[in-house]
Image (cartoon, rainbow, N blue to C red):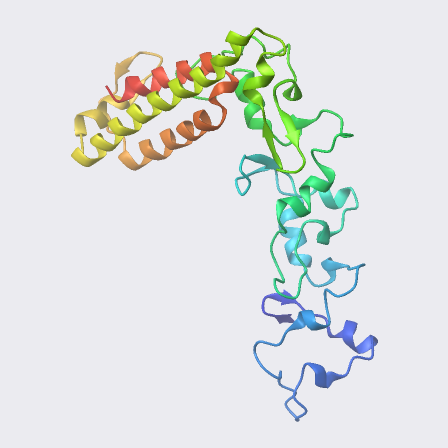
Length: 276
């Protein structure tokens, strides 16, 4: 049977000699005391929990899923749920089991950082942070933009530019790290790249907004171009589709543009061509 969509097995409580009256009103129909009975007053109180006994459906649903992008942190990670139970981590390592909040993920500072981003951990950033690595290697996955690896893509590691701060749970000092290998003027490039990207994105977003507000039909036709023949197909492009597709690209540039500035410029050139 189920209680509030969770699998409920009476045998666990009966075998443990739990008084039926804790959950049920003592009458012939044995109805529940109330609809909001608090299971966590007895459950989630012991350190060694077998969560799958009651939450098997949740485990089955997410265990074998492919890696998915998680945006709940300040940066995106490619997260595969099955890696954690397969390494014998209990559910409570990541999921809250407090009496106040009986579901959900605990704060990042309370779980992920206990195992990840530790000083003893060998370099393996790209196992979770796939997107910035793909960008560094020049693989944008955008029509009309060729493979364009950054000139330093084979020479540097993530930790060469990023420094982890355990107290603040974020990376810091990217700009100042540049000068440890290059001269002081090179350190200014990071700020210059950031400002250039911001200005070009601001101009592009403004242009798109104007096109949306004016319902520019000619623009919609012009954007649907056969890249191989470089000619107008004459077929219209749905504005919502265009916004969604470019929105993903803009988000990619915003997050990782400085990882590969030449690729970023090529992508921006391509975007700007579409909204001339």
